[in-house]
Image (cartoon, rainbow, N blue to C red; front, side, top):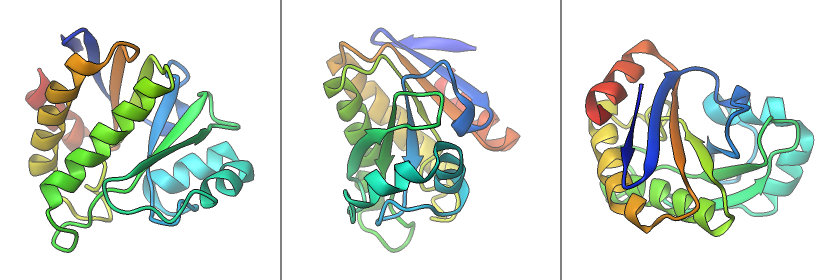
Length: 173
């Protein structure tokens, strides 16, 4: 199932973000130091191998809402865009910081001539952002940024659970 927002094709799937061979870049829901962690960061770092941490750790620490780009190493992609989402209830204002995450990742993709990018549900796991609130912010940000993109043609949300997949499909489609 997909649709277009200002010429950018939107897709939502349940899957493993570290196994998306049809994408130029994947987004890491990173920790501030850009090192191996749990969840998405752990999956991406395990698959990419130790060189990813060697490169990314030099770029940290980053603040909530910021994004940086590295090579993808043993992942089937060219790039990893690392962004630090807000911790719900701690990092304020959460809505702006979450939006900044997606916005900054998309602008990095655009600057690096990336045509296809995959996002997890940033901040909704260990950082406890309520998925229902997060997906609304994500959609609003995509609708705001998509008209400004000329290189990015495909945006795929790779979701961990069936519940998140249903929520994203309901929101985007």
